[in-house]
Image 1 (cartoon, one colour):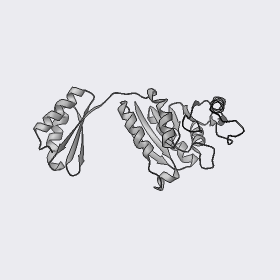
Image 2 (cartoon, helix red, strand yellow):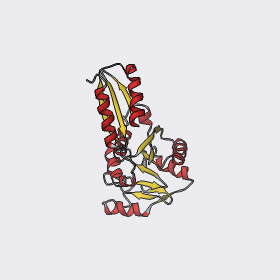
Image 3 (cartoon, one colour):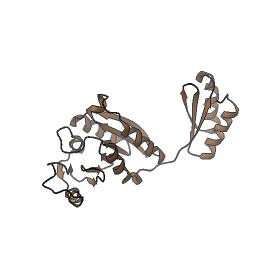
Image 4 (cartoon, one colour):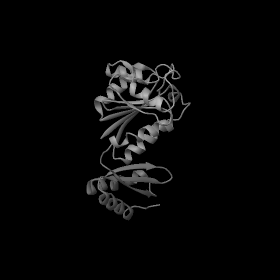
Length: 227
């Protein structure tokens, strides 16, 4: 399963808010064997949201969108999602009923709180008010981290893939000196290798087979100056 993550918010693009949502989602999806192939941030602009979501839903198995939910003037994500699908925004009765059961009266709710794209499945916000939605593989979640995490946990079973096993080897040699051994690892063990220089060079060996990853890492430890 491959996924794109889209975060929405002018404050993210201005650097006023750190995008912790994307990092958290990528880690959780990786744990489930799901490949995240795009992380994109777009402004609070209907046309940009619609364009990016349309592009990504054609390319990936699922798209997760976070941020911009609610009834205020700059909460335009649901409008952008509706535009991507060519659907109208409609009051979602199930979402309203849930909000009432959670203690909110309809008269107290700001107009548009429960407006979702026509035909969407509502995702109830256990840690806040504004509901999320699922529509044809596009998952729309809040931007508030606690709300996003709580809501994602209600749907994360819908994301699955092939688990990847990793071994990390820290090496006390220049990255350029390791090229031949990296090539050997790839050819001999059929693993992927990531190289991350710093005070030492971290080589991350990955395979869908745990034993293969372990053997490749052991060979590397025997044939390099490890830290």
